[in-house]
Amino acid sequence: MPKIKKRLKHFIWAASAIVALTIIILGFFLAWGTRSFDEFVFFAVVVGFSPPAVINYLDYRWKRAVDGHLPDLFRSIVQAQETGMTLPRALEEAAKRDYGPLTAELRKMTIQISWGLTLEEALLAFARRVDTVLVHRIVPLIIEANRSGGRVEKVFEPMGKFVQSTLTLQKERYTRSRPYIAIIYVAFFVFIFTIVLLFRSFFVGIEGSNIFGASVMAPEDMKRLFFHMTALQAFFSGLVAGKMGEGTISAGMKHSLVLMLSGYLAIKLFL
Image 1: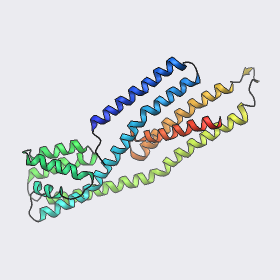
Image 2 (image 1 turned 120 degrees about the vertical axis):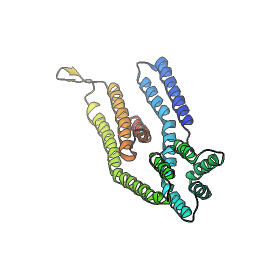
Image 3 (image 1 turned 90 degrees about the horizontal axis):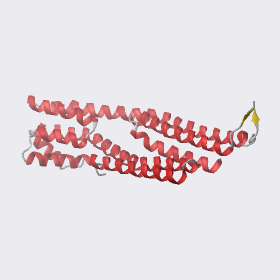
Image 4 (image 1 turned 30 degrees about the vertical axis):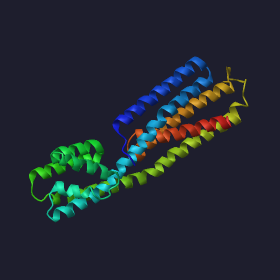
C-alpha cells in the first residue's frame, strides 16, 4: 500500500472542488429554480467528496499499518542493541526486515544517515514523512534518549509497551463505537422509512385540500422538501459516524457518501 503524499491530497481536494463547482455552475444555467438544480447540487457534493474520501481512507489504512508495526520494530532494535549495536546500526538492520509500509520509510532514514545526516535529523525527517500521532510522540523521546547516552535500549522496551497499549486502546475504542455507528445508520433508514410512509399514506391523500384555511403543499414541493431533509440528514449523520468511529470528522466522508446515495435512491424509488 503506497503512502499518500500531502501534495497529492491537496491536488485531489482542489481538483474535486473545481469539478463540484463546475457542476453547480452548470446546474445554475441549465436548471435554476427547478428540482433538477437540487440534483445538480447533490451530485456536485457527491463528486466533490468522493475522491477525498477514498484518499483519506487509504491514508488512514497506511498510517494504521505503520503504527501497527512499531512494537515489532522496537523489539528488533532492543534485541540488536543488546548484542552491542549502536542505534543507527540497529535501525539499519531493522530496515532489512519486513514491517509493511514502515520498511520503506526505515530504508529512507538509513540512506539519509549514510549520506551524512545526523541521526536526529533523519529521525525528524522520518516523523514528518510518516506523520502519525504515535510517531510524532515517540521520535522526540528517542532523540532525547540518544542525546543522554547510556543504554538506549532501556527506553525502547517501555516505549514499545506504550505503543502496544495505545494501539490496543484504539482498537477497543473502535470496537465499542461500532454499535453507535450502526445506530446512526439504523436511525437514518428509519427516517427514510418514515418519510416514505408519511408521503404515501398522508400527503398524497390530502393533495389540494385546505386544512385550517391553509392549502397543503403540492406533492412535488413535498418531494423536494423531503429530498433536502434526507440529503442534510445523511451528510451530517455520516460526519458524526466518522467522528465517533475513527476520531476525525474527515473519516465520516465515506459514511456521508453511503448515506446520501442510499437516501437518494430511496427518494427516487419510493416517492
